Image 1: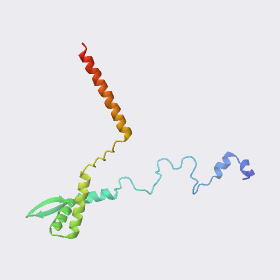
Image 2: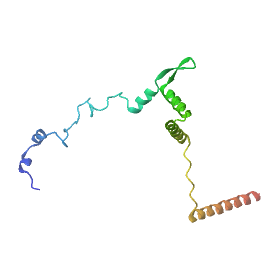
Image 3: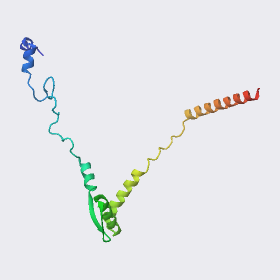
Image 4: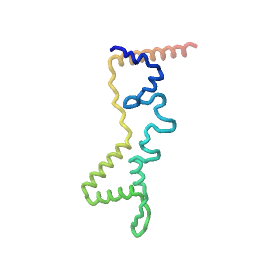
Amino acid sequence: MPDDPDRRARTRSETKDDYQIGYGKPPRGRPFPKGRPGNPCGRPPGEKNLKTLLADALDEPVAVTEDGRRHEVTKRELGIAQLVNKFTAADLRATKMLLDMLREVERRAQPPSPPEPLPFTAADEEVIQQLRERFEAAARAAAEMEVQP
């Protein structure tokens, strides 16, 4: 690739002034001014995500009249109570949903089972045998030292 003679002739300041900002050419020096975020149109601080919004909505209290008495329960509790009531009325969709929920709760509650131990190889058996011989020799030596006063 031949050198551009004009490029060599330009001074450093001229190159700096001629630099065009664009796609793949970020501003030189500081890419963003101080105090300005890199993604100004992004999620504002304090904005809640879907998980938080759902948890907040399910934890809202609701007034319920039961057996002539009025008390407050959360929407979460009310939804589970309604699901169980439909389950007891033999609603198949409610039965499937409730059983799936129970399986998931039980799966999370159980600690993971320990992995199956691997069988000893011939090399492992050899090492174990050598260790037994060492321990037996050490025990014999200790017994002989106790016998000799």
